[in-house]
Length: 357
Image 1 (cartoon, one colour):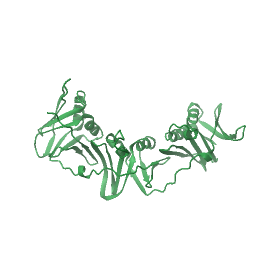
Image 2 (cartoon, rainbow, N blue to C red):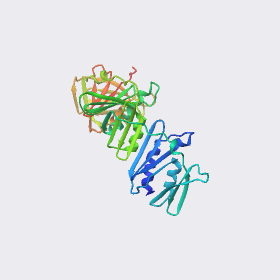
Image 3 (cartoon, rainbow, N blue to C red):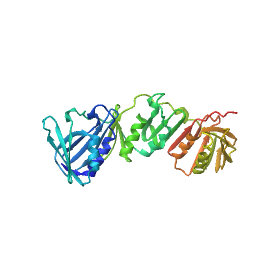
């Protein structure tokens, strides 16, 4: 089989991202299959299966399983535009040898018995949803970095409505939502591991489709299919948090607010916010030094009052960084039990910290 070297290398690199270190050599391998002008390379682990495929001009049928690192290292070091892959019997006649020829070089790799390779899981999708991958990236800051409270908190929750959908991430101190034109009631909801989505998006990029069959999940686009296990369990009920209404709303320039937080955070990881609905003061209270910033409030609505609250600096900075609007509106409930920001397609919800008198 003759194929472009860079095309072969690109497919092998994508599939290799599924592989995890193992004491079993075949688990660190790739399956290479060519049938009727279609080449597919598959990498597999217990967490993930990645199938990368493309059309090729050669119609030769071809199947082998080889160690991923050796195969990709050879293709990376070769300089020829094309390579030829062929299988020959070893001297013992027990295993096949993969011969890779490119330019003046020819290398041999031992293969594994293709019959020992696990078959791809059967997959008949029940749910199929086309999503904006940027929404996952925008919510990622609110995923928990620890599974001390169980794996659910490291996951995204996706709700599909009759029209549109919502993606939620939370870590117990903040909630981040991204919303795409939701209408009607929830017709499907499911939970996806955050690390799986992060890896899948790094490979598949944009314009992806997510499918589930209640046990497995597939993220795909033309040329790539990525399989993983569904996360089972019930997601947190955040309806009460979403229902909290603001008594005061303050609109500021987002970038100015973010700059003030970055500077003030040098002194303390918790910041105190004071407002009289005309200005917003941001300060720190550590003994080693103090910081003070004052920003004009462009507009205020609702109850005009003075308010003071404290937030963890990186929580509000992460939220502001995930928003691209020029202006941001900070919503303050009457009892200040939460601080949140809402836009057409987002909600950022942060629990305040106790202010020591």
